[in-house]
Image (cartoon, rainbow, N blue to C red; front, side, top):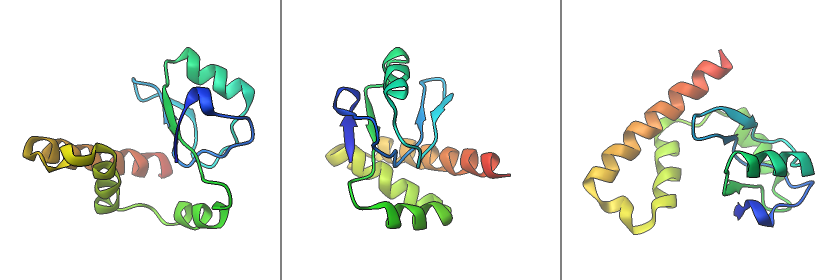
Amino acid sequence: MILSVDELEPGMILEEAVRTHQDQLLLEAGRRITARSIRVFKTWGIRRVVVRPPGQAAHAAASAAMPEDEEAILRRLRTRCGPAADDPVLQEILRAAARQIRLHRGEQKG
């Protein structure tokens, strides 16, 4: 569930890692949001984050154990773009982004 930083409350759990525009990790997926982390997000200009819907802890733990493949990443990126995802140029950009995300995550685990 995507929320504005202003809607965040301490205790919520991140579904996805929060990174700066320079790709610096601010808080990992699965971490509990604190008042301090909300201040850090605002300081870095983060506008929205993806948090776990209440009651989805088991699903999130299972998905964290299984690495996401490039196609799954691509599907998730397309859902965020809405109707614009049908544009051929954007499709290529999303494929490249999915490849980079998968490679980046692989480097972090190794």
